[in-house]
Length: 251
Image (cartoon, rainbow, N blue to C red; front, side):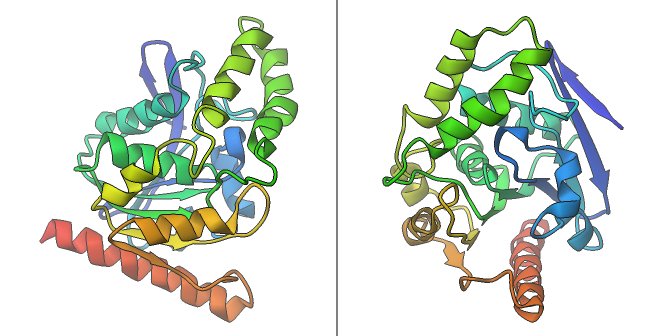
């Protein structure tokens, strides 16, 4: 399994297929990692490998993964974007499409903010977001599920650093996508396709807001993951959306 290294950061990644680059990140919150794909609502590495050069990665410090590095306490979302863009640089890729599941919606927002000229299209699949009725749902997930295992295997990390990291992830900008403001999405020109969800960690309203604010956004029906025939049509819609915008770049 290939590894990309930059300074103290070590990122495990995998590739499959050929064609225009498609970076895909699975769900799992802060434990987003490669081995989540077999149980994903859409296994992007299988579904799109005949159409694109699919690239995926363990996110930095995901439990069960092989990507490690310092906690980007002062700029957590920027730290993830640095890893993702750094991996693309490592692979010699300038422009790419992106599809992010769960926490990947926040990754997408930050990538669009950081490098709009590089992200030719973005798919937000069941994105996480702020839920006013339970504003700490993601903070608790990080504190209660992710942090204990990380602290157990990383004696160099301390609880106060973890607390500050989670605060800066989920409490500094407690509205919308966490990673970027509404103005970033409102002003972006990136083509966006939104696949909504409706659970506390993936509020339906966040998906609707992304689709409503972004000037070049589309949104699928909801629910879209069942019955199987509808799910297959949704996968095909994602494929056609990506092909349209990736081919436009090649042209």
